[in-house]
Length: 264
Image 1 (cartoon, one colour):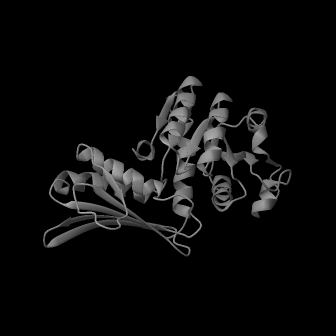
Image 2: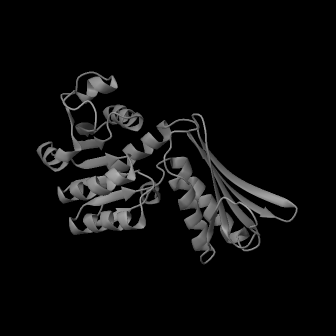
């Protein structure tokens, strides 16, 4: 039985992940952490009935993870919180599933070092959708054929509550394209006099309840090719995260994996 804990358990993603874990054979919720509802039963908080798992304060993360014999911690919160909590969990011997976006290069490095030092395994991904995994593969292949001769622009759209921009998925897409092209600069939106060069344009839209749209455009003379992924529900991220949680506990330790590794 894989014992799964969640940070941000009372939020929208946390609630959905708890429901999916409970519906997945061979998994159970071992601990829950949040800034609200401390002491309440997480099952009652998210509306699935009593689980005898109280919501704990993140300041007690290490102790609760050890006491609950947690195998893997799932974190889809904010960068500042993940940067603190992930190394603590790694030091407690707990594997990690991190879907937090907006992490700086330094924060990612610190988390990776903690994973290696404490001999646990982690999956860190900007997007846990299986469809996005295919999307990344398609843009990698398309860039090999088109990237040198076509202008590349990335457009992403999310709900009006998303704090970071551009999205982690858009950044990952840009990194994939840039790598295939031997390194390219990014232009985050455009204003004033800014002639088009060889840069990768990245543009963010925020509004309403858009779950997540990502489009990569390859624009040439007289034609344009677009590769697009649209998320209709957060359930697609939940399914991938729970799949990764079950996968990571059986992998080689001291390694940080990507969602592409989970999907093989």
